[in-house]
Image (cartoon, rainbow, N blue to C red; front, side, top):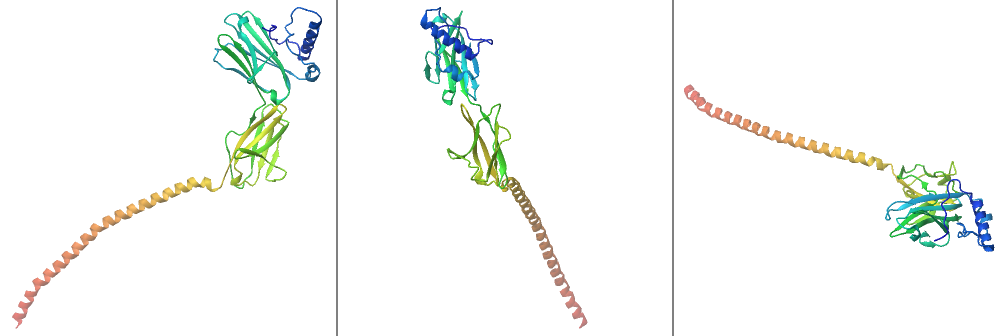
Length: 328
């Protein structure tokens, strides 16, 4: 078990003064055998005092009181180099000295870079380090190995960007503006890319007057695209560059022709025309069907009249002959 101490509270010593104390403690231990100091096992590079004393100290802690299978994580956002102090607290079910404490960065075991302290059944472990580049970002985890393993993880990331979550819809011939923002952060540089399959192609604003990049504030960027065509639709990426890494977000652009909004109306109009035509055909068919019985009745009436006329002529013919015989 390493040298033990409690995690520092709100009134803790500043980082530069702490480093001075650590350096003095380590130098004095070479001349004599003073009482054990909780700081002697923390390695302090000689050039750290002069190199990183101007950096701010960021402190974060995790309390492992959940069941072993529960994931205890804390997401931390950093955009500039900082001195970092991570503290994990764990309550042992048995003897605290039998608990094995380790730290890892991603999958790499960290050795001799942390302190451990026990108070009653409560264990504290603390890891102090400096983040100055993107390689030192990532996940730092503390492990307490009892009967089961307990883990707490600190995830270090650069600030996330916030673009438009839904596709931006516009029309051929128009102009549009794509916007990306970063809340409470100030990137050192912004870059726009256009998706080309699985690749991202940087937009050359100086060689192509179709694009204009601007930004009213340091934490946002705007890409104006003019004279839109259907070829301009697709995925656009905005990328922010920080001292500790890069962050990107995607904006989806959809370019429609003016006929596209009319298609539903044209479809409805076509359905109405078809429906009206069907109704007219039904009416015409019904009228013709009613007309045919009337034609039959007229035909029967004509035939009846013809029959009556022929009967009348036959009846009058003998009378006429009788009149002629009487005259003679």
